[in-house]
Image 1 (tube, rainbow, N blue to C red):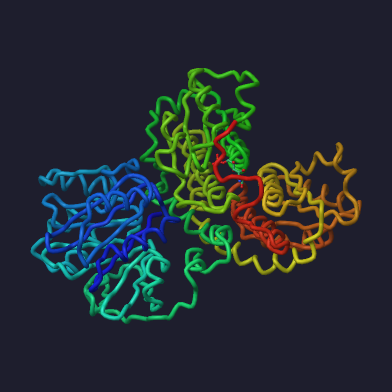
Image 2 (cartoon, rainbow, N blue to C red):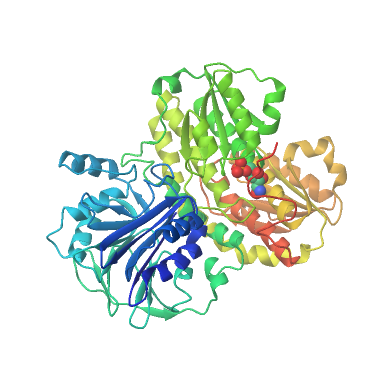
Length: 609
Ligand code: M6R
């Protein structure tokens, strides 16, 4: 996820681009850059780091122009360096491109361009677009962009300027967001409305596979064959702060709702046309994958709950033994590791010091370490032997939401990848599970429709002090995560517990007024979870059951409330089951008037032991 912005009109473009990019920094902030077309031709300034670094570079060496494009990056291909920052140029510096998304076939396009004599200056997927436009120098710029859009696979929101068309920006969209702002004698483009909201409230949404031709006086939108398409314009009523949250009252609610897109982006390019799982970035020799005889999964907080799920998935699908550890405990138990051990370190930020210390310890014992992070080139990514990335864009709310569900998806896919490469599961079974994973953006989208039901049910619990979240097998990590969410943002005592373990002690806490939430989506233990929930009901607890659609009748007699999530196979379904529990914590916290994005005593990234 990156932020793009463009301006064409009478002003100094930088006066629009710089504040616009500052408004988009929530989309990515590892590097930034601008390209202007002015009297002296095309000038590009870019820097690694935050917008403040770019502003300092522009102050040190001012550039001018009234047509310009700008970008704030959240790295997907290539480390967050100045060289990889956007805009990217062609060989002779006449074309500049900014891009949000992923060009999936970039490697093949790049190889072909290099064979034809193009020289590349970055490691990014985006740079191929600049060179492809360069190859079409004799074409009208919009025709060239339409042509390039037909060649590039994947998700793209791009904006292109070319020195021979100095009063024009051509942009295009497929998958990644792009909006146009109509001004008076000036026009704007951006990934998101906050980038230009201070200049205009007239907004045009761009559909997929559309090319936008922008001058100061005109906006023309065409399909990829050049046919003009109708423009529908609307007037925005949000203020700037509301716009940064995409119209949602909080970042957390926005991020919960971004989960279908985050999962789509995370899956992109990882399953080929035949259903085979491919991790192009995972530089791990197949020999190592075949040699490992034990797996450790290490993480903290919510990421640890993803590790719990990974244990079930990897053991079930590969028959490799898996140990899971809270990172801050790992080194102190003297774990038995050697060069046949695979250690998976999970950290969305990639900077959690407990997790870093644990994987460094594991590496020192000879283990192979795979990192799973949401931040390209984070410390975890650099320290690990190989790395996998979720692709959620920055998560601003302290409570992990979209980073968790994408961790679950990546770990499920990685478990199946191990099974595929070690031959422990038949291809048909892998194919069915992969197909279910590919459906998750749709099933999670449907799970988001449960919000109203959950808001209604939690209204009466604003003053409830005790919650239990119970589950068995794959539902147990969901229970743990539901409890953690409630604790951290609503400041309520909430315990996540294995449903079958309650009778060995904690059941003495169950009485009238205690809310007990049972998760029962893992079919091979559902009947047992239900029996355990009967035990909670018999002691006076208020019972909420999270089940799959179609199972509502089975739990009707035990449950005071039933939440039915869309069906997916066992383990895969838990991704759907997490969503209502995120809403549950959110609406209880919200009803108490708490700051859900910045809960007390917590930090988004924990860099102390
Ligand atoms: O960045 P990490 O995934 O390593 O963070 C680990 C925990 O600090 C984090 O998951 C924390 O528990 C969240 N606030 C949970 O919502």
